[in-house]
Amino acid sequence: MMFNVTITEILKKTVKAEANDRQEAEQAVYDEWRTGKYILDADNFVEVKIEAE
Image (cartoon, rainbow, N blue to C red):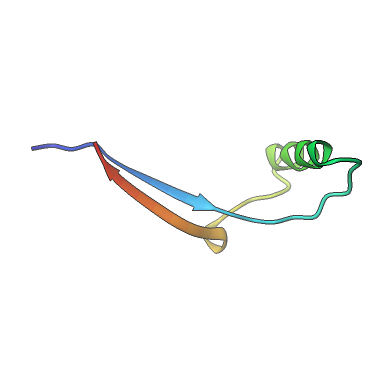
């Protein structure tokens, strides 16, 4: 039998953001992440999930 097995790695990093509200803070960090300011790598690894279909 052949199975498709999905490997999902979860990386996590906390950064500080100055903003007027939570939504603005999230958007600011998202924008910075998209432009490459924050690069998550193996040092930010927190969990792995492996599932066969």
